[in-house]
Length: 431
Image (tube, rainbow, N blue to C red):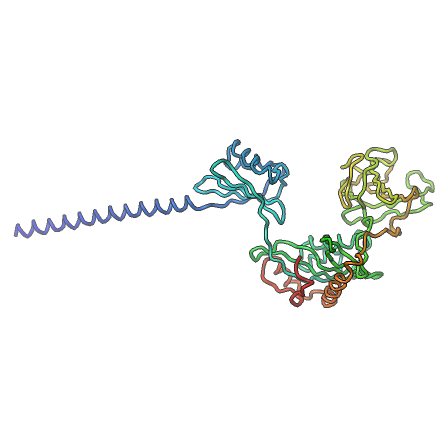
């Protein structure tokens, strides 16, 4: 009996010893598995993305996110041969890539088509610019203006950026501040850009049409034999003219027109008013209606703060009663460039812009001025232009105002929505 008791006790001790050994082995294997997982995680890159804050330099941004001052400066110096990081802009994406907690790469989105990549090497950092490759799909958009072009575009489920693109094409013919009316009709063929199936923005418009009560306008994108893209009317004349139709970037009503005999509200007598007054809140962006050189920029008596631009072919433009001037004398400016902010300086009855245009020493009525066009399609390019014109005008005629805006809204959210036109012909392939 005693022997059986001793044997049973030995078996229990042996079982307990074996269980203890198994538990220790299991714990050891668990520790090894955890270490292996940690090792894998440490070797796997982690991505952290943010937008660059306002008034931040990339150096300060990197230091605030764990990089030493020395390393941040090394990143900037490495990038300098391919891109100057002093030109970073607020709101652009910055991506930090870390391996094992250590920063290995920095990606900065320069613009919609380029990303700056700075990667850690054995000896410091190296930089290159990577092009972003989008998938372009030709889509059609059409509508009848209700309220304004911008409001209608948004009602169609599109971004206001598309309204800007359409307005820019016709801005030499239509002043969308004063001439666009409810009931106007528009249609466009546009390249929509997608990245990994998500809508990222708009490429070029292949063709566009804007019909008012008094005139129908059509624009065709055509690449000349030199490779330069531009928009032309169906007759081959350029859509672009020497000047834009408005000195203001945003809608403004005309409070006083061109007149040789206008009653002055302050001086209380009749005087010539050789310009156009646009009602505009103080600080509204004022744009150069054409490329030229700054002839005068400063204060000038009753005109208040004044900018005068000299253009080709004997034209000069005047921008009066400004609150702030953003250019200086002798500076070269381009068409559409913001040159000042509107104001209420000088002899003024309230916030507005007094805009004037002079040709060969004589002030003209800007609203009725027959503006000179840019260069037309050349004779050698005419046959190719005629083929492109036939294709895109046929497509434009097929477009009707979209009865189901939700379909277009879905495309903005990245949902796969087929364009409302047939598969593009060779002339309509995305550019």
